[in-house]
Amino acid sequence: MAELVRDVMARGAVCVPPDASLVEAAQLMRAQETGEVMVATGGRVLGVLTDRDITLRAVADGVDPLMVSARSVCTPEPVTVAPDTTAARAAALMREHAVRRLPVVDDGLLVGVVGRSDLAPRDAPGRRGPAGARAARTADDAAVPAGRRTSSPDAQRA
Image (cartoon, rainbow, N blue to C red):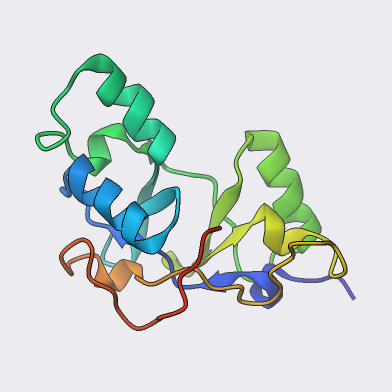
């Protein structure tokens, strides 16, 4: 039987609301030791914001990161997968779209994130395995001020 995304994904996700400043997003990335956050509202993913996005789309242009919103710099409408997507299909989508992680969405709501390391063969070095959890915030928590940790204390670098 094919391995499914639900079996290997990290549940929850590190999120910021669309109007969060880039400084808030960067501080949350640092606190959660991750290179990306989901831009979400009401549990729905609006975009993905990476540390590289902040650097190349804002800082390199000389804009004030306190005055620019996460939504204005993020990659909008990211490629997503469902929990019942096969791991092989998720890996193919990552290669096709040149991304390291995909938001996992169920009935339109963000439920987790799956990364390349989650999809590595089970015996591969560095595989985090099922729910290798790095997520500390869910889309429903996006209204919580950036930097505050919510339900999951096991955040780790993805």
